[in-house]
Amino acid sequence: MDGEHAEMVRLLWGPHPRPARGPRPTLDLPRIARAGIEIADAEGLADVSMQRVAERLGVTKMALYRYVPGKAQLVALMVEAAIGPCPAPAPGHPPGGWREQLEEWARQLLALFLQHSWVLAATVGPRVQGPGELSWLERAVSALDGTGLTGAERMDAAVLLVGHVRGITQQAHAAGGPTGNPEAQLGAILDDLIQSHGDSYPALTAAFASAVDSDGRDQAWEFGLQRILDGLSALIDRRAASRRP
Figure 1: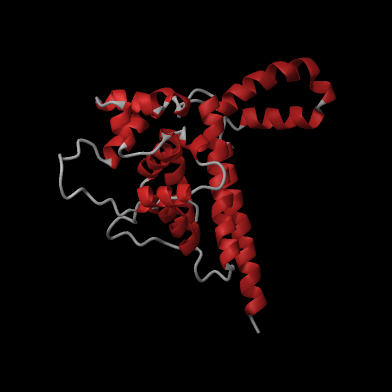
Figure 2: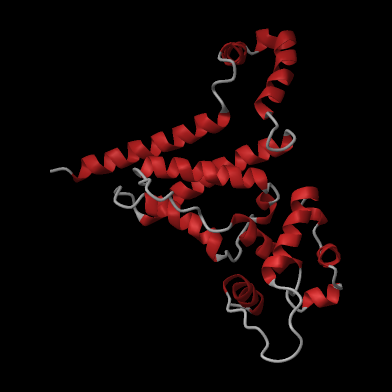
């Protein structure tokens, strides 16, 4: 592990020893992360900088560098704080089967990404993940224990669900945030085009008319989530059948 990765691991996983002597620290990592999150939530990840965070905390940028070496580490701390540990099942409510667990997990992840849409840009590519973020992957993989899927397949299933969550979050963000309706906006654009060129696209015209008649009931989020779970169910059933004598 190189020095940069080792420093990232230390920041995300600890330990974070306090100096035994000298002045009492004026900052801590959770407070720094919260300041960055507030900027990112309001203005976007591009507007987060060491200078902006230092100003928000009322310290100099050099004082901030005593705690966080640079922006990459700052963003990693922000991601970990924003995502946090995966919520545990409510007391007295059994988690249910694998499908119920993954469905609830995906809905919780969607809510989190909609609240902090900048996390999409901050979680691309190979990187060190913190304990809270890894707890989400742990929950999804463990939900598929006993299904007959291999470890690699269980991880791939989690990645597939995350991909769906990310895609829907990106569409909602492009449509104006969590309250935006990308399907409605796309429908308005398609309506004009189909009115003028529908004869050239008969299948699309029929599908669009059906979507309008359904009054938006076939939402991309719900449709995609259920089809992914249906596919996993079919694979699990095949594995079970292959094990029968």
